[in-house]
Length: 107
Image 1: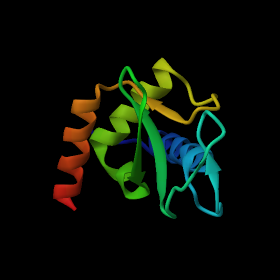
Image 2 (image 1 turned 60 degrees about the horizontal axis):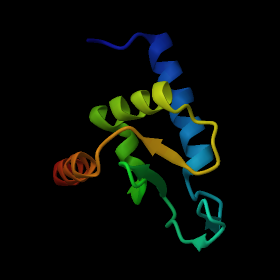
Image 3 (image 1 turned 135 degrees about the vertical axis):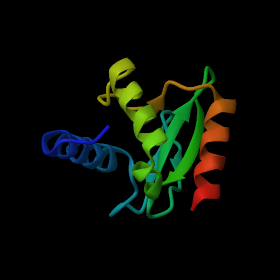
Image 4 (image 1 turned 45 degrees about the horizontal axis):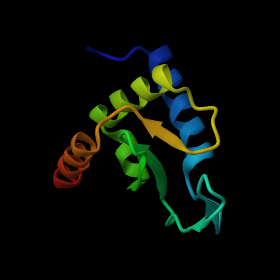
């Protein structure tokens, strides 16, 4: 299924919004939901996954992967992007670990 120009523009806008809210680009420090200082390396962003909301740091390059983009679209539909905790993904932790492992293998 080919992306139309308007859907590519919408996808680009969505990715920029995600990067603005969740990446460490231009930031030296960030805080978790409890106010604790945490380090997120440049070029990465934090996501929360599973029932326990386990925190994972993933590279921004994952945003280019179609399966990760699908997960982000599901996250937007289910949770939206307007909350303080960070980007929450609707995915079980074991599935997320499998997905990120597959993406890393492809790179």
